[in-house]
Figure 1 (cartoon, rainbow, N blue to C red):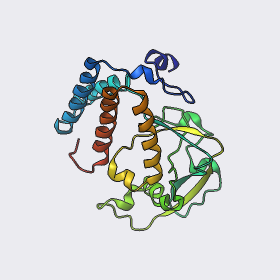
Figure 2 (cartoon, one colour):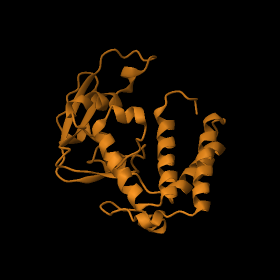
Figure 3 (cartoon, rainbow, N blue to C red):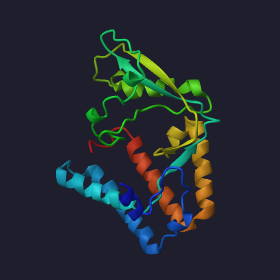
Figure 4 (cartoon, rainbow, N blue to C red):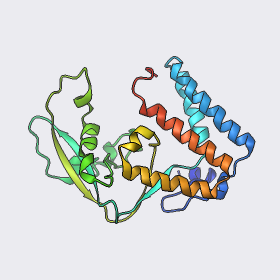
Length: 229
């Protein structure tokens, strides 16, 4: 993994982005936009192993040369992360490991959306400027049946964990959708600061190409039912 990061000039945790790396040539900018169009075209292509592999290869290529949209979370401003887990059959949780990924049995952890095999992680909600407003968001993440029109679930008990943030840490932000950011002013402010810094340090053409890609990618995944793909 370390060799892969080095080979593409990736940014490790705690390091600043080397903005000089993103002075793209016109050829590279055109390549990025062509790859974006290719990604969009898969919204209407048949779902198959070949198409999945093709779009995987395109995304791997793009991620290799654009910056990760990483923002620093200041522990002085964000004091906690909320985590929820659904309760079934009257169960009561009393251990930390029961409301997060099981760090006691690392070998049992399989690859998931945001973790590698044997990597203990958990989903949570970063509070915004009005922290209490985002309890619902973390609730729905752990039990999406509550908002599924076809589900028979009407009532669901949840256990919440409040995880105190003791030091600043980087977060990979994938949300650039305007509708989502209007509802989350704290994140919106962080992203605006990030984009302003990038705009001041990266040539205009490169900045526009990168920010356009982030925006389009975020809009795709923010839409519900564009197509089955």
